[in-house]
Image (cartoon, rainbow, N blue to C red; front, side, top):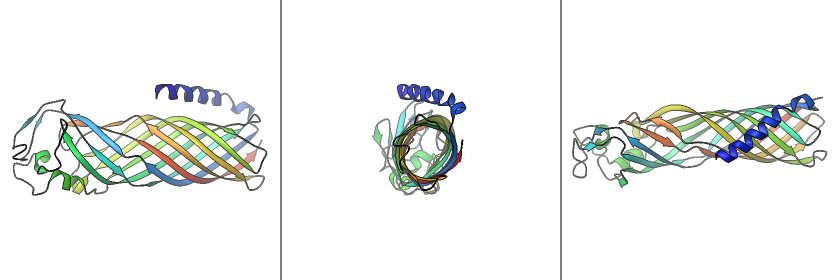
Length: 261
């Protein structure tokens, strides 16, 4: 990923030097589907003692600091909105500053493991600290999301290249580097586990096509792959942190208005 970011940073730096030669300014916006990739959440615990998960994990079992744990999260398709202000140049290059927002809900969580051992069949009291069994397993509790979701608010500096730019249909490719504030809520069955956010460097790769409707109006459709490094957030149920993967594919349609030179 560091190599990709270095290439994108070089492209964005070049784009920053181009506005003085801009032939045309534009503003645009889009709506679309956010296909959020599933996450293999991983982390490590602080030191704590379990609730009553007997016989597998009796009440008061000591869990050492640094013990690995995690689970799988399946996301539903969400939505995306964006707005961009940019400039087009005579050599086929185009640059823009883009503000985006995406949101996707959780379908289910599964495969909760501690130190490599899956504990889906253990009473959920093991993680809540309760000395009394709850009568529901860990797997049953985490399988039911309760408002669980992931949201990303991002700003990108983008650089594009438009092919066939004098034609009615103009394909293009692009890339962007930016910053994303990623907010995650995991509270399956009302049990609060994660409810926090973290800012991360983000990057995206794009491909699409523009349709010149008139001298000023363009319509476009594009696909974008967007990602950040894993988001590291504090666990609110027991001591520890959790790394959550954040990758998505955005399929969107939009429009641009050209202001001219």
